[in-house]
Length: 280
Image 1 (tube, rainbow, N blue to C red):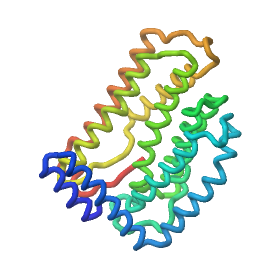
Image 2: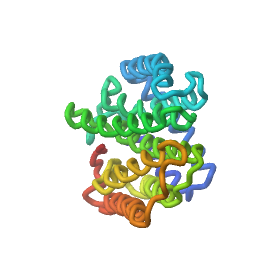
Image 3: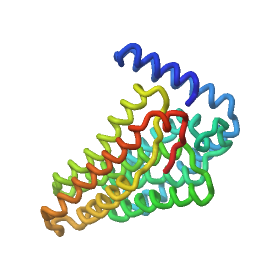
Image 4: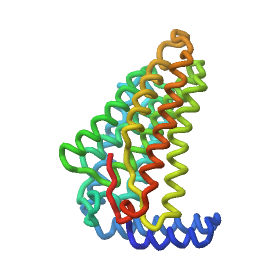
């Protein structure tokens, strides 16, 4: 973690998470990101190239998924994504290393594409199952590439978690648009991502060292079960029957397992508190 961010994090904890302290933390984090960008011009050039390529790619993405190329969800996602990426360029480093990579890696670029599949779902695309399948495919592919090419980064792990949540929530919105409600599935997804998000915030601001970010086997199982359920529910309107009690139990149980597994990852303080890396 950047020393300035470490100091800001400690200050927020000392001020007991008052709103003013949190606002100060966010503003100072932007200043740290700007200094990081100034000190790494090659990385910034890589970020700008990616921004241009994605802008040219969006009309093709819209055509593949059957949504309007000028749709607000696609372009707002594009702007939010590259702003978020710029702010976190300081995480573009291998696990347990301080030196930044000079370019945004191929696995991370693959992760970024998942956000556009989610945006297509959010915009009410004509081919929601295709969008969900492509999003899930990038989730599998980015981890494989990161391990195969030895390009794991803290940035990739962070974005992977963000876009997993975005894809699932966008798929739920698409299901609602088709006149369906799967309350058990909604609860399971809210528990999986909401629980992990809250735990991550608590650990970030209360532990003396940053916690590892990454997936667990229970999380992967929960993600696979939920992805299959979302794909099923995104069928033609009115064609799918309500899930049975065993399926609803499986959704909830795997979500609880994912939250517990993530909690156990955060629990051991001593041997994880010395900068152990971020995995996908």
